[in-house]
Amino acid sequence: MNLRSAAWFGREGKAGFVHRSHSKSEGYPDDVFDGRPVIGIANSCSDLAPCNVHLRQVAEAVKRGVWERGGFPLEFPTMSLGETLVRPTAMLYRNLMAMEVEEAIRSNPLDGVVLLAGCDKTTPAQVMGAVSADLPAIVVTGGPMMNGRFRGVQVGSGTDVWRLSEDERAGEITAADLRAAESGVSRSNGHCTTMGTASTMACIVEALGLQLPGSATVPAVDAGRYKIAQLAGRRIVDMVWEDLRPSRILTRRAFENAVVVNAAIGGSTNAVIHLLAIAGRAEVPLSLEDFDALGTKVPVLVDLKPHGRFLMDDLDGAGGLPAVMQELGDLLHADAMTVTGATVGDNVAGARRWDGEVIRTRAEPLLPPGSHTAVLRGNLCPNGAVLKLSAASPSLLRHRGRALVFDSYEEYVAAADGEMPEADPRSVLVVRNAGPRGYPGMPEIGNLPLPRRLLRDGVRDMVRISDARMSGTAFGTVVLHVAPESAAGGPLGLLRTGDEIVLDVGVRALDMVVPDEELARRRRELAGAPEDGGGPGTDGLGEASAGGEPPGPTGVRGGGYVELYRRHVLQADRGADLDFLVGRRGGAVPRESY
Ligand code: FES
Image 1 (cartoon, helix red, strand yellow):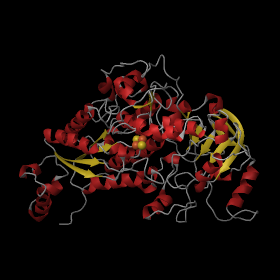
Image 2 (cartoon, helix red, strand yellow):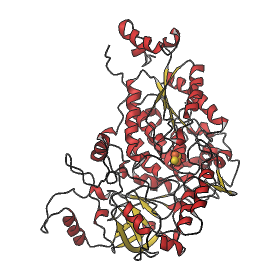
Image 3 (cartoon, helix red, strand yellow):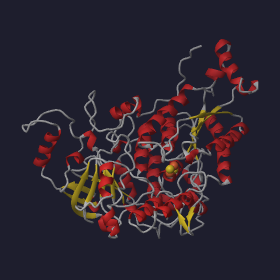
Image 4 (cartoon, rainbow, N blue to C red):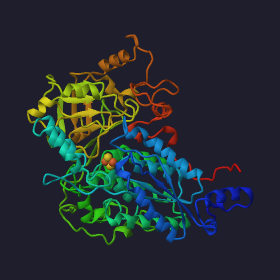
């Protein structure tokens, strides 16, 4: 088999000289360049991404494995995205990171790549880039932090932050109490401890077959994390010789497995968007409806926050994802190929559940089948919206109430922190202009903080609707990802305060009770057109007119990338990737310049 890297290091004459000579300046002996698989280690370690900062050490363990197996490891930095620090939202830059990863893989003398990721967007970004480049690739996620604890109680990332913050707004704890909890929630290196987006995506890539079985749940500070990294380093060398590329692993059956696992673990709604984007890169058909349809037979087995009680270290001790997948049995495609070179069925055959509280059985699940993701349709969301059933209040799943509509998150928060006299527990809280294009970047603001006055009255959940996302650690009866978003001409932009909204999750419907003629009139008014119709604007359903200035806010002045993003981002129901990045471009060797 001809190694791709031979096009650099295997050349005679000037070209080979230049490539080898400069790399030898790093201190490598001659024989390293004699036909060993060159393994890139794409490292998203950054001091600005606290969840990924330990990947520096993880990379060293990967290198051990690569050397052991006769490969040549070369670590390189990728862009990184610290979920808690990047503004306006890390999601704005997921596609930029994916683009950078793809181009770094293709443009360098690599035969395979190990992807080191952890924080929410870094995992899908690495995977999207690698899938488009389609060289052998294996993921090593960084693992969760140690379980949090505060004043004798176990506390989890995000979930308990939202809870404590609402307690403080309700006057039940002090600001000093809230601040004191900070160190207790985040006790070590690693990503969020709950089944938030980072944990979900770690499980998802394992379910897809892209990381070694049992990897997803091992804590960042556990010695096992480094063992996994070393084994992944060994395995990627073999994968190069086997030519085991993402395109051989990421079939429709692999995506169905990931959707089923997402339901069983009660995973983040962000996984819906990221999986749609990864499927787009892999050229595998996957739709929003698949999440609802495939989930109808899948019970929630894992009792983790935000929908349950425990944290990731507990899931690891209970047997980790292999035990969950073993319990799912015939709900999974056991014959799906994985990075091990074996099938999903082979990988999980010996898995055991060690704690029946944390991982339930299908016979006695935490939540019955169909309790996870609901995909809604209606005149408010013709291209779909998502609601996480396991995080919602059953009493609100069939609800009729009057909308309180806000054009920005900031406007809403200012109102919610005041008296907000027009709000009552039946009100439906709506924020728009928070979608991929509108914000821009589709931030995690969908779990709107409740009006302070109602919190004081004991209200702890209300129906909330937006074209935004929400953190995987969050909870509430929250309708997310409304598509098309208001800034792309979606009907959410036509809604007005006082309109009645009907949410009926049983029949997957979300509608505003406004006559069609009135909606048409509002649309003309919004477009600045005369009452007899016509005028500028978008078609109201989907992408902005090609070549025109996209509508939208923004108040965000970005550089060239932000403008590129606003012009090319797809809607949430298509994964919010950039339209020109969808698909697999492969890893053909670029032309040489020596
Ligand atoms: Fe990085 Fe949650 S903030 S994983």
